[in-house]
Image (spheres, rainbow, N blue to C red):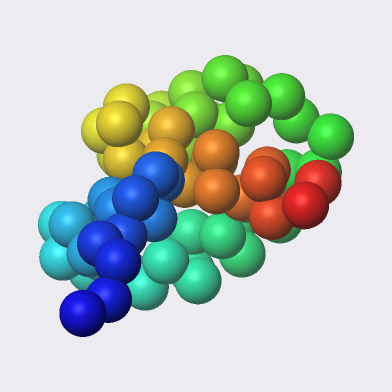
Length: 69
């Protein structure tokens, strides 16, 4: 048995289903916003792309962790 997905990635299936784009699409968009802080990125995804707060926060957290990890 595999471990259940935890953390921000646990939101990915519902993000893809709700917004009709693969997670890679959202991460690529976040790549265009280099130097922007976490909550600014969350606000940008919400305002410009219509994501809900939890989904935007999960994408940003994953994106920023991957960049520093």
